[in-house]
Image (cartoon, rainbow, N blue to C red; front, side, top):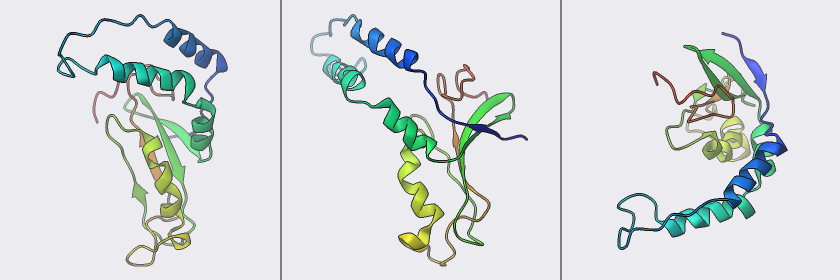
Length: 158
């Protein structure tokens, strides 16, 4: 299995296109007294769209992800994106961290550094750390379209 280095680099034209599409949203009418019985309420969706237009900084999150070594590989014909981080602790235990839907690798960014270098924060119960020079690996389960770009919906087998 080959590991190919990977860097997230979302073209500015794609981000601009998203902003333009969000600006053109045609809002539907909400069913009276439906609440969330038929999905997310209109006010929540409008707040989310406003956040994506004016509050979310793509480049900050791109940089946070790119601060760690990333790779892609192919498993059962599917492109899998993952972070592969080596521990600073010798003889630490290897750790594979996997997320489920609707989570993503972004949910684990705050735990990477303490896991890779537990001595800088809090030691594990045996003092060895959780990782070894074998890496902490965080595979990204592709969704409708992962940023690794395979363009397929999900995985046939998980």
